[in-house]
Image (tube, rainbow, N blue to C red; front, side, top):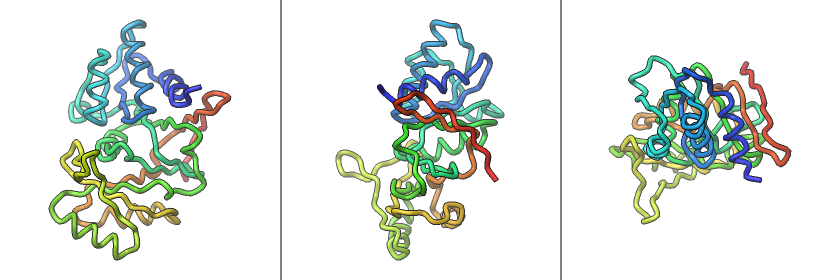
Length: 226
């Protein structure tokens, strides 16, 4: 059983006619977009997609999903995206696919957000997955040294050719190998205030439900944030 496909298909059920839908990035969101493309073609589903990366844009266009840019819509009705880690209190780390900035922008302007994950992504505490921090190139090596001094064990996100990866927004990513994040909200605030940091992969209080793929099927967990 492909757990990513199971949750992608389940999440697509929440998409209704007339919706503006935020389309996530990554190997799980791929199945969501594929199913929405099928519904557009076979069922006449009327939606407008807002993409979070050039990769998702290419897939959506190939499937015939009508698209608009985030600045062409006042709000997104529903964004469905994957996550790299989801904690017991439903905070998340995203950005393994290097699309965290666009993903967070689309999520911020969404009335509702759902994460789709397989059960391996559900953790007690965030931090085993490296935390991505998107930075502008100018001054980025100084930020890297600052993270080293703080003991955050930074590494550059590299391409297969061992060059520093450049995001769709033209930025670099520094991954922080923290192992455990005791206070995600405090760390998010700290990173928000560092000059040169464009965005980070901590997604705090952003979702209404998470759909978890298990061998028994898709488990829909409603989320309430304090």
